[in-house]
Image (tube, rainbow, N blue to C red):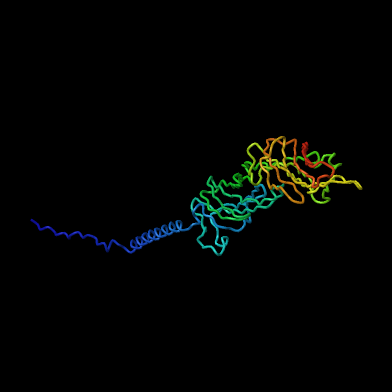
Length: 371
């Protein structure tokens, strides 16, 4: 039996031999990338959460739009409003925002959000009475981006904003609200697509109507019997302005649906003295005059809805005035005015009646334009 040759035991490789320098550097690189990626992701998420500029709905005052994508024109009762909209962007630089703002503010719009810059300015436009006597109300302004509405909260007649909006800002609209009526303008087309009750401002004006006649305070017989001492200067004793139509008036608001406000300014005034016509040596009677009122105006038999800026009284020139407002479905054709005065004799025993009643009480046709 031959002796077998002893075999050397198998050696297990040491980890020190398997972990080569190349493998070591590869692992270090992977770990470094993972750590840096984790830190950057956490920082970005933290900044996204902390930076108000990337939150849809955030706004910041801005300078005026210098290169507008579209300028919209919206008509208001007493103003013409111009709204300029810039092309939506992803970022706004610190320089554009102003040196007083933090570098992070609105510097990035973030994912699924964009920044839209708007400027607006309202200019007074020529208006008919009585609008000229009333200040304009503050209008409301909102940006609608892809169906989401952002209230710009304007103060005064002009301003500018940066607005962060959700989505890609592909469909932009501007809403202008005045005294409860909202108009919508489409930025892409530049048209006011929904005018509401303000639609008459975008059409040719309805021609005014004027009374075809003179408002007389005294009848022909009374003029022969009395000296009125009418003033040689100043307004005529009885005045009737043109009858004009408007969709909106202060204090009464927008005209009801299917109707229009028709307005006429009326006034009467008379000296506080009336005398019988004098002869060279004959007696005469003096009368103290008062306005009995009221000054009444109707259009096509319809009483006014309201009287704006009414006035009544006066010692030296008693009378009344106001803007008479009517709600009508069609243009009026006739006007009627009454304004009763009473004159009482100061001394008894003088010729003439004790009391004289006068003042207009007449109807007139209304014609287009100036008769």
